[in-house]
Length: 244
Ligand SMILES: Cc1cc2nc3c(=O)[nH]c(=O)nc-3n(C[C@H](O)[C@H](O)[C@H](O)COP(=O)(O)OP(=O)(O)OC[C@H]3O[C@@H](n4cnc5c(N)ncnc54)[C@H](O)[C@@H]3O)c2cc1C
Image (cartoon, rainbow, N blue to C red):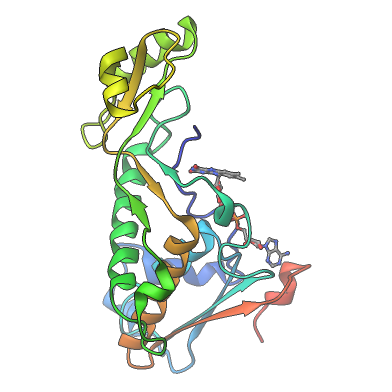
């Protein structure tokens, strides 16, 4: 089982990085927002995986007075890379149950984004009719994740880590009967397993499509102030994304 905090920033590129703080520092003053903004700020995001769509979503959430145009470039399309084929296991721990760096914040953010994506998917897309057709039957399975201990060393380590788990995503130590009640016939060499009742399994393609739909909905709701476009193109050099 892999850990599952989605990486928000890794592959995305902002050629006009100097503009970014104007949108996002919490101390943005009204003076900075009153800068003439007749032509939209343009952002290029490279990659339409977890990182890229996350960045696009947050860019679109900048103050409503700002005109903003976001182009998401991907040579394959949404979820064309690792994100699209990932197992979608979602919790804030390493494979040995250690809380990840900034795990609590990332976990909170993931839950919020899932909510955004599920809300978008539950409404019929404007041009496409029935959303069930687009998103199929599951985006998130909330059934928890069970992890059997496989050797004595990791059992000790995981037991220690479990004691320091987050209240918002607890790790319970369960015995053989408890584990086999959850997953009948599960093989438990050490008669012990770790259960994360709050952990989830995300269908990555559906989640990404829905989050991109949420981006489009957000742009539509901005009455022309925000725009998002998916550009299917391979980028060999980030300078290709340089503004005019
Ligand atoms: C088999 C597998 C299972 C996994 N399971 C899990 C899991 O259960 N839980 C978990 O948290 N993590 C899992 N991961 C890890 C997780 O999928 C990655 O950490 C995450 O998807 C990285 O997201 P990303 O947006 O940074 O990259 P990507 O999803 O790879 O996105 C990069 C995008 O950029 C595009 N791109 C790349 N180069 C160019 C270019 N030159 N021009 C245009 N476009 C380009 C690609 O087409 C791609 O769509 C798994 C990974 C794999 C491979």
